[in-house]
Length: 178
Image (cartoon, rainbow, N blue to C red; front, side, top):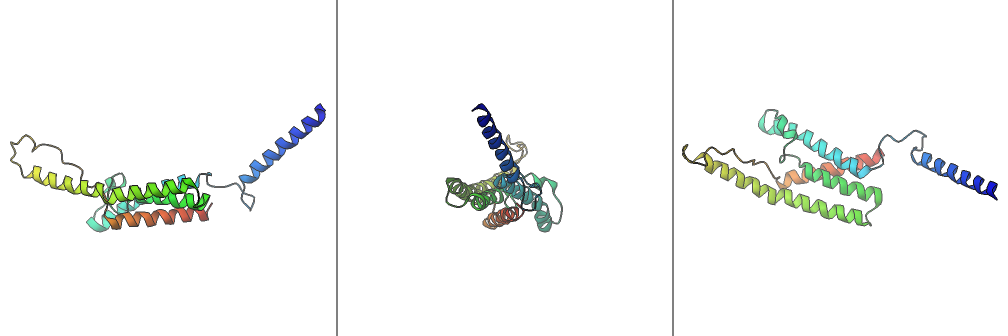
């Protein structure tokens, strides 16, 4: 009996190893190039690509390169929107649209995009106005030497939509190369 149990265990272990090895290979027999978490990779790539594209959109608008745009918030396209839309689309493509992960990703994407084009946009506009008021104060006023507030916080609806489209394109592209 001990001999049969060992053979069965060895066969089960060998089958498990074969299944694990087969799951890491594509149909052509080569090893997968991307790690298995497609939604996470899609989201991170979309954010990085959106931040990189801000260099060129700011150059087009202002006729100068500003490397700070790669790390800053605001501008075209919205990296927040790109990231959450890529995440939602990639989860939908990878796991289907019927699960709770997809529902959570879609709700989160809606909240983030609403916040980017609503609350944060208006906070940026208020910062611009406050900066202007501080600049008009007399030099001896106690508030006149305060560092200006960051006014590039939010996004226009067009910037949010561009980020969302970019995120969807990245997720679909990543699915094609999976």
